[in-house]
Length: 374
Image (cartoon, rainbow, N blue to C red):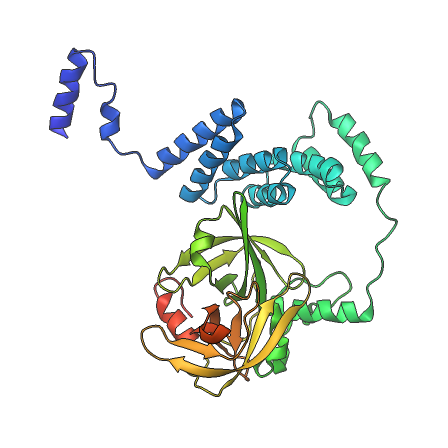
């Protein structure tokens, strides 16, 4: 350090030392702020491609930077990528519920570009709650009135079957009961520990967005705090936005906590209140001939259930499971359960002869031992 100061002093005498700061490494926070500033400048001069790159760099350093998520949302909205814009605005508000500009932009999006009067009214009202003295508040209230006139008088009542399905989903996912339903609906049915057909609410659909690309995969909730096991870790690590769709239809944001380079197994954490989960992570070691149930996410209220058999187990370095199940699209990350409803593994790839290949839960536990306790 003394040598550096002497050098700096010498350069100052010569009118230099302007670049001596390059010898001092910036902190992550400083680098983050540099990328954010560059992104804002690129956006100011309407260079959206470079602005997008800079804001993406910010999120690689700090996935919880609300300003970067907001700026990405604005760019996506300008480009007409409305689904990505909505996800980024929602992520902004999840990180900072006081970010009023996000409510305003969402309201405009839902009132003009992707019409949804109910959501437009909700977001305009949120904006006015945070900005009661906004100079154009009167015009916004007039707009809210016109949008409210477009709302249906009432929603169609749900059928008994739909209501029963929703209550079952709430039992397993820990969701709050809706008005008129008893809080006892959150209790877990005793059959859950022995009937894999009741496990779909533990399975989620994962979407990840990286600029122009998108991947979909399945995952399984493994903790009451909302931790999720899945695969496609490398692709998830390159994504700016990750969302999780639950079987009750809720779409929530998630972040990547860890992924294993060797197996591509990933651990996510979704935004969620405490969940009620059964004990399903204490399975015995699988063996050839064991009957299994694969549950694949199916974007919507249902999941796809496929029955199969383990045909081979490689107990070498990676404890791979070979099954007789034919692979399908988006099957990566799908959990494998035994006939007692216990998690025995997860699909990581297509195996030999066109059959899917799974990684045993025992190996997954070892892989993530330093990240989460099972």
